[in-house]
Image (cartoon, rainbow over all chains, first blue to last red):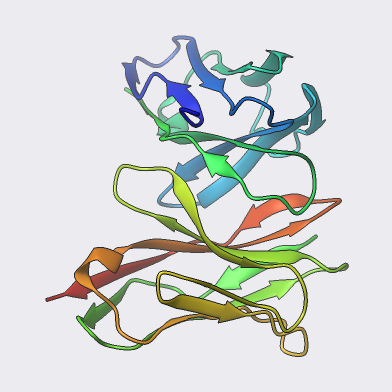
Length: 114
Length: 111
């Protein structure tokens, strides 16, 4: 298995633009997580899905952020409009199922909003 | 809610020194505990885990013991190498709460 695949690896955009980050989880994994990592706040859980259904989105910063999982092999995290304070590394991770399971992380998408 | 607190970094050691990174947790149930490691430019990778009290997780010379009485899961290694330089994250997972991470501790090992 190629692991968790994220794209793009790097994105530089201007304030106000829409940003879409993509994630392909490991085949057969039923849980998918989006995290944001910054120096100031460390690793924050934004949202997670079980069987394509959002379970906990309390970590989503505000309405500018949205996440979807239309099928078991694809998820998107969208920021519209983007702001400089959204600059961070966004990680997607997947696990076989809910509960005490190991997460496999993607390599991350580094977002810079100018 | 459930959370983990780990020692602030950064930590700088000489090669072959002994390493301890402290981690304590707060949980209402019986979580599983994990240490993840993040190398530069990469995502987090599982280093070791323990699923119940008194379990010891170990991998690559690192080990940590799940201590329920002190709510701790400290990471230790007897002799660190330059290649161990990375950021280390303590984490817990409860079936009802999923994975929560500590702030991370940056370790630099000098030759």
